[in-house]
Amino acid sequence: MLRRVWALLPNLLLCALACGKGGTEAPGPSSDPVRVEVVNRYPLAVEVYAFATGMERRLGTVEPGMKASFVVPPNLTTSGGVELQVSPAASNQRFRSGQLLLAPGSIVDLNVTPQLFSSTATIRP
Image (cartoon, rainbow, N blue to C red; front, side):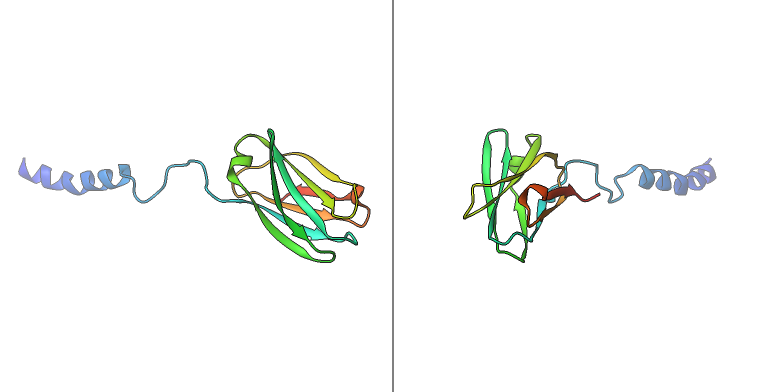
C-alpha cells in the first residue's frame, strides 16, 4: 500500500502544478494607451482634437511637414467611438475622421494632406 502512495505522489504533484496559476495572467482589459501618430503635410500648423460622447480633448499641435505622437486619454476610449478632428489655426476648415472604435493599445495613423478634405485616419491592424 505504501508503495502505491509513493508511486502516485509524483503524478499528484504534476497535476497540482498543471492546475495552478503557473504564472499566466487571466485575460482582462489592457492598460495600454491609445496612440495617434500624426503626419502633417498641410502648409499650416494644425490642432488635433479627440471627441467622445460630449467630451472634448485637445491633443496638441503639429507644425507643417512634421510628425507627432499623442496619447488619447483613457476616459475618452471607454465610452465607445472616438472622433478625431484636425483644424488649422488660420482657417475655419476642418477634417473629421468619423467615429473610430478604439481598443486599448490601438494606434491610429492620422495623415493630414495638403487638401484637408482628403486627409485620412486609419487604425493599424
